[in-house]
Length: 70
Image 1: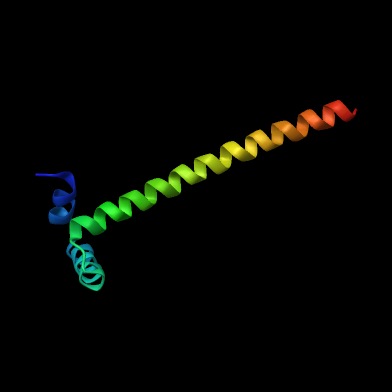
Image 2: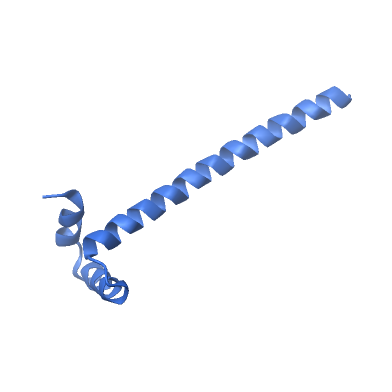
């Protein structure tokens, strides 16, 4: 049995109810909703890591520029 199906089956009843309502609203299966949520969280995590990396690189560039000016 795929992991996403086990997640839905093992979910707390209140979570199942929410999934069911979302599923009906968007005309998607509960599995599709769970997969979509996981994908969205993964993208969010990836973007956050990219942002942190960009900030570090920007700070290094700024420090380098300051050092060259002095």
